[in-house]
Length: 610
Ligand code: AMP
Image (tube, rainbow, N blue to C red; front, side, top):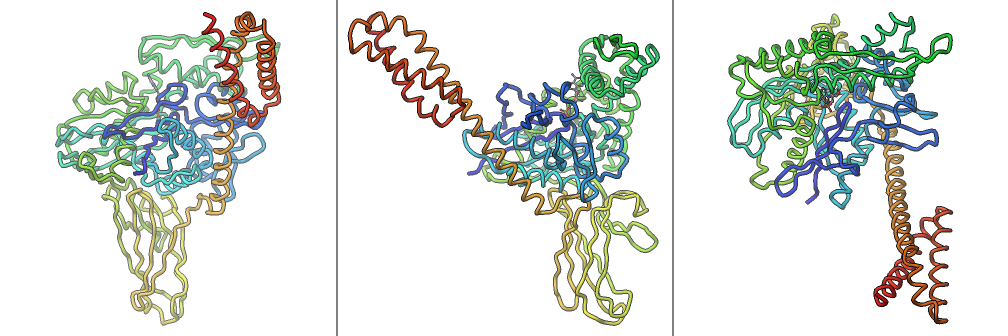
């Protein structure tokens, strides 16, 4: 049976997990870390770096290092959120051919799904290294509040990375799955998920029969740890300006250092009451003096700077409870998910609001990835312990634009998915052969205030007097939360399947090309890894042979045969060194046999003489 991996594709960190022998486990990367930064960089030499190695060089290569691409996925260039990102990100965000946003790294422009695909591909490789075989299937998580465009773009990212994303699930739901898995409980729980970039809250009913039913969900896809960091940055920048009359934001390198320092200070303040932000040589004054930044930040100050952000999450919790029609005391447990829930003020706000201590025992960084792998295993494995049903909801209302620019609702927010609804459309003019339909997602009564998912034109209608043609259009949201539309001529029964072409999505041709490039990268990267492995093996063998040379010479140099053997061994080592200098990986691989024989022979000689 194919193993399905679960990937928590986070704004700042990603985590991959798999179910083994009925237990979900988080897979560590080569460095031994269970989470990998969702960062991608391109070096001056054109080399792609992903994860920790991208993070390590971010300060010196800020313009070509992408972080938080998830904040841009599925978004149009011309939106306030993207404008805000352009103003604060050190990398270049440019407009793509479909009104989407793209990122320029060195001389190449990448779509956001392509950047996310690089992270997914890295997670895929981490899993493959661990499992020892190729992995093609995955469940990927997204914030519950992601709309259709963002979900579709995440699926595209999976496809580019060479993964068949068998299901997209919501992060808080994944958190609840990991929390309730194997517990056999009947409980109503709230999952409070504050990560690096997004906030989600979901209320679920978990039953001992293995049903995980989401009752309501809400969130904000632009509220997370980065906003907390930004408050610290603003405060530091302002203090520096008051002192030196210099705007640190003008300097990309300084800005990146500030970002790192702000995040570090924020995390430290979860454990201690005060910390010093110390950035020597942050910038030069107009008179070319080196200036330093040194500021003490207390936990109380941080809490004051970010009070409204915490309050906003609490307001969203209140809304969600209302939507669910539940009182606070009906919530039996609160699960905290996401790195930001380590902040004491966040924990305090959550316990004050729900009037109970959040449950301990789930790891906020790993729980979403674990839940994704549980869902993945349940989808392919029908063994008893994985017998469970996940019933999620759609976070946004789906509808169409009608006369007067109004929004007519078809599928209500918080409806259980999969779900569908049909609506009849009639022609309004004689001989009308086409009808244009705009599909939107959102909560406003005005169509233009909602997210346009796409538009489609029903064509090929029979010529007939106005009002005589009736077409039944079915709007469907699948278990991934992705929208599709079908139309049927009620009289002839003729069906048309219409894809809602996401206005900011990629075309299949573009995806195919990106897939091709990603797969070439995977082959080259595996090749590089193999060469590196061969090189290391050769170096170890040479070092061992070198070490034994004096002893072996002392034993065998007395005979012609021995001298000949020594000569040959030297030639073997010299040739291996020459191949290494030339970077001839294939040649070196062949030479490993000769090196191994020589090393064994040397060990034999030394062993016998001992
Ligand atoms: P996630 O998206 O769940 O990986 O969460 C990442 C966010 O959690 C980032 O904004 C981190 O700065 C933040 N974070 C991680 N550890 C801590 C901590 N100890 N205290 C406060 N925030 C943290």
